[in-house]
View 1 (tube, rainbow, N blue to C red):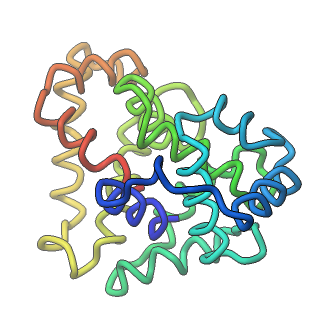
View 2 (tube, rainbow, N blue to C red):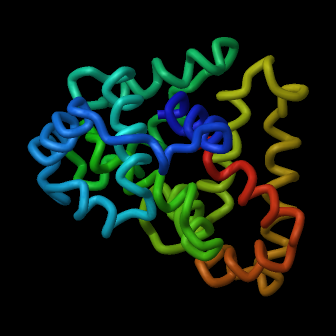
Length: 220
């Protein structure tokens, strides 16, 4: 849902969302949201599970339904959305990893429920919550730690996603050098594993990195 996330983060500063009067259409949308979501089942419950207001949830839901009228997003649809923004790149690997993160129940599709819970962490979460989400994204096999292999695979997927629209393409040798540098900084004892605490401590010691995460965390 790169389109919706980027659009929301960019536009929220120019919309005074909280003061918009509630219309009949909003009432219909409230009912539709309640029927569409099993957990949570109402706007109030969504608010409790996220850090969004009612007005923000309505705005996000409209955007989601406009992009995905059926209310369900599969991996192929997610890839298509990303290709709109990175037409010169290869989004296959990146969207596969991202999809597995958003599809929390492994149903083969994700809904607005899954989407908004993810968005809440990335846009409104604490820095620890954001870093934990990023760690889980890198830990693609759910092993509880990062290895040189899966770190390299994620970085490669990002490079392929950007394609020629990004910086100079990274070759395999440069990519491995970058992975080794990261491991040398985070894993000085050469355990060949990076735990979540190692990862969070490493990031927090770098203010510029934290600032980048805070600025870019809405661009999933």
